[in-house]
Length: 115
Length: 118
Image (cartoon, rainbow over all chains, first blue to last red; front, side, top):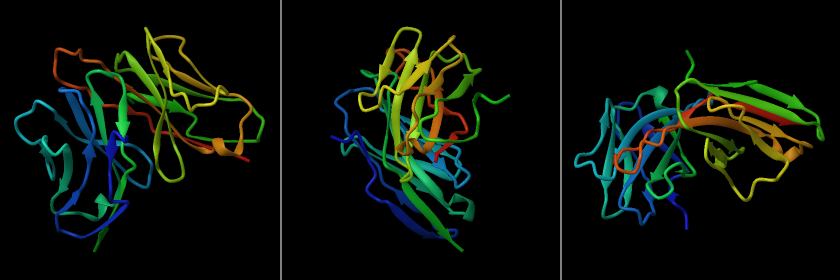
């Protein structure tokens, strides 16, 4: 079974609008961490946001927030007020307590921001 | 200072050649990784390594071998390169914060090496 599933290969959003990128995960561990990365066309991997499984509140970092629904095993990334520079690939990832050094990545979502 | 640096950024070579990609991290992390990103942008773990354990993804051909002279370096050596090896290779590092912490350190990536096998 896939550890991380991103079901949206491509997404479009109008500039200044909000967009949600979906991520579901599969784990039986009680403790884990969830991450989102951005990969622009220049190729580098940029860390955006982190959510721990025991965190009581949803993580936020500027225009990025993580909609964490533990019972549904989803960790969707919300980008508010989209900008042209947000056009990129976005990857969801997970790290589990029982495989502490392993990171599992989803297949990514390509986001295009339309002016 | 770059946290995770890898060289070269671009590598163009002929089929059958042997090549190495170097990676260094100055973060004091105990675990380093190599990922392969194919043309569809899928990130595949190849190896993870700390001073105790090398974990090899079983799907990685044995033509690929990690070499770690010390904790801060994890180089990738590739023998007998094939056309299908063309991809972007990322080095990364992270720290195991310990199971009791409930926290997980993120993965720090290098800038990637674009390997083209002709």
